[in-house]
Amino acid sequence: MAKLTFLGAARTVTGSKYLLEHDGRRVLFDCGLFQGLKELRLRNWDAFPVSPASLDAVVLTHAHLDHVGHLPRLIAQGFRGRVFCTPGTKDLCQVVLPDAGRIQEEDARQANKHGYSRHQPALPLFSESDALRALTHLQPLGYDRPIEVAPGVSVEFHPAGHLLGSAFVMARLTGGPNILFGGDLGRYNRPILPDPSGAIAADVVLVESTYGDRDHQPDDSGAQLADVIQQTAGRHGKLVIPAFAIGRVEELLYWVRRLEAEHRIPVLPVYVDSPMATEALRYYSARVAELDEELRPTSGPVYAFATTRFQTVSSPQQSKELTASRRPAIVISSSGMATGGRVLHHLAAALPDQRNTVLFVGYQAAGTRGRQLIDGMKEVRIHGHSIAVNASIAKIDSMSAHADRGEILRWLGTLPSAPRRLCLVHGEPQPMDQLKALIKDRLSWAPHTPEHGETIDL
Image 1 (cartoon, rainbow, N blue to C red):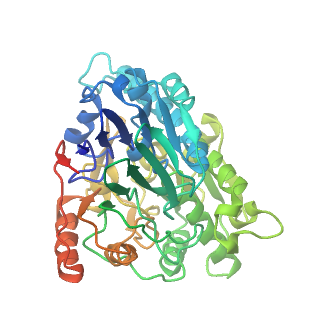
Image 2: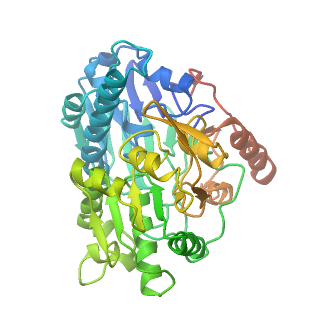
């Protein structure tokens, strides 16, 4: 009998991991980090519930850390199999995983240096060398090409429109049900990536519910972003944008470039202070055939992301100089939830000054600095110090790469027939429960909302 265990993204938005067991074989779908609340982050340190060496394969839907970030630790603990993903996901994992290892090592060094960790010594969850070892396990597979990843278990990737290389995965079991792992579902009619592919008939479907309780702000052709830039420039301030280094940075550059071309904002220096984001831009440019047609100009794909005064920041010294500068500029840096990385230095310098603005353009999980700031905290802790919040805090939801409730329903409506079981994952309880009620009302289906660690028979 086949069974599925929810090891993450169950009643929360992070830590995506789903363990499929069938005829004595084990395949893990996604291998993500928990982020946000401390009680969730502590799960990253727990022993894996089965021996990692007993897993036949891992299958990844896309390269965001909450879907791939636990992979180095899994391999360090004994997993020896292949990790199947799309070529685009492999490219971005080569950026994301080593960077995450470096950040964790640096955070541990800072904690030990300044003594603000309760653990002595503070240790990284995994190292850069662990991440580099994990990359050797990646096995790229194109879209729409079924492959057997373990005896009796075949998978096939289909474009999800969420991130370069993102996919939802159809898993077919010999003598068993078909399972559709939705991954993170992208949006319709957005720049950069094509719309999500239509869903495929399946017995069991897993779908995200991150924004299951709301519809995104309608596309305003960049009006809100233009307003934030104009107001900040009018105060001669700096605009700091914590952004997910892959996916969100590309859309931000697209909009800033477009607003400049339409003369709707002043032309300011635009800095991307994230080696990971800079490298990701290179991969997006190299895979131009996977982007929207409007981003395929004859002059070359980089054109779509290059603003008038665009600069990348490579060295730590350049980053320090930019942090210290008080000149008006747009600084895009990671991480997107302000949980680590170079953006913390920019925030520590910018937040006390009322001329500046900090703009969030993505989901902010509970327990993150990003959530604290948008919730109105007047003081935040950064690198062990209390930082006063005098800068303007703004948020734009229209740039989210996650489908809202209407788009989730639209995608579910492409299923040729109702699944025997629909599981809502990757969402906090309130939006998940509201989406559950909406699906019951609109589609007359009875979704299940699994708890962490729950196992269901398929």
